Figure 1 (cartoon, helix red, strand yellow):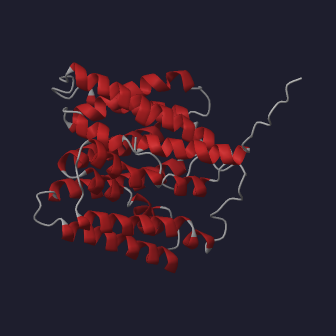
Figure 2 (cartoon, rainbow, N blue to C red):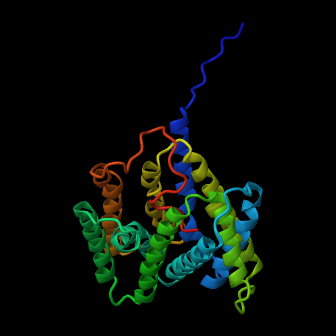
Figure 3 (cartoon, rainbow, N blue to C red):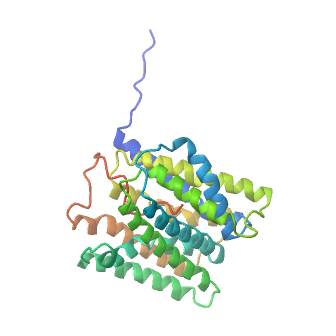
Length: 306
């Protein structure tokens, strides 16, 4: 009789964490794809959303549909953040683009008193100061490098990412997969009529299809699955692997080395985000769910920009 070796089993919480970690790793390939594709930002935004919508079709369930007005505003914000992020990555280093986009949660903090009628607390101001310090280091260290346009676009993508996150909080009643499918499909439909948007090479078209699957559809599905067992705040913290790995992949594969100012400024922004979702969050009652509980469908933390 052959003895069976015990097979290790992972708890649902551990499985959820690993699933979200894998999603973040796949998201982090964004910079490499954008740098490798020769097409312009408009074509990349169009084809990325076009292929992503196709890949999401099997996952769509027609329940809890979003309201038309919410969809219109959401599509506008989604289109702006995608185009600005891709343009930023084209115009400046991938590291600058991703770090500046991840200022989004701080825009949420800054705009919440006006748009959400939420009180601005001292710890929120502390997080904002840390973030702004990182942004100042980024801009000061890259002054005169010719990257100013791309960096301003990066800040713009962060702003629209923050606005989009706040709008997602408004639409948390809606089915998240259906919502993303609608947003991707609508953005693709809008950009489809831009002159020259279809003029991409066969190589670029193949890379865009691969990007839509590897960098969007698959990780989005993994992230949504992981949120069944992992609290949204913890998921946001795990997702910070994306801005850390993004410039690393670009260095290893493309050979684009970020400046020292970019590395320092980006590190300051990441530290601010870590504090935002750990120490500062613990000082705010009700912001962290108990481990293993089912979180809300939408998170107010960093989500994939597309």
